Amino acid sequence: MFAQVLSDAIEARLTVQKSDSFFLARAAQDAPGYLTKDEWYWVLRVSDSDSSVVGWVSDAFHVYSNATTDFALSKRDIRMLATRAVPPNRRMKLPAKGSSPRLRLDKC
Image 1 (cartoon, rainbow, N blue to C red):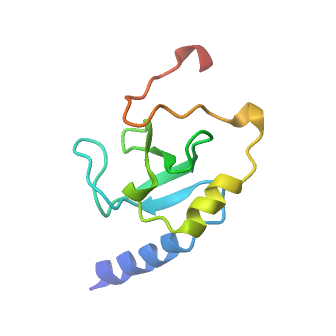
Image 2 (image 1 turned 90 degrees about the vertical axis):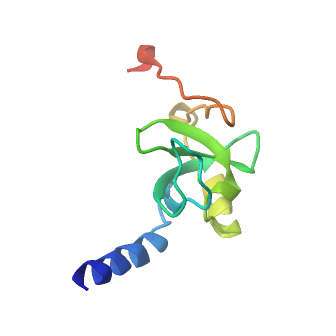
């Protein structure tokens, strides 16, 4: 009982926490090995070159690019991610949709 009440309270909070330049969003699709439906993932931003693609962080801390439809994102959520100002020196290049992430050791 307590666990369910706590779970519901956390879920309610996560649902309304979209005031930062990135936020947690629920996965709407399964992608075996890295994305699990109904789990929460950090969604970072909308791709500069394709507004139907978002960058997100997996449980293994890899950045991937997937379709916006792979997450439970409203049009407002997508618009917020796309319009948030990110200074050019802080922008990251998102991996191509469906590609594997690359670790850039020269940037560490």
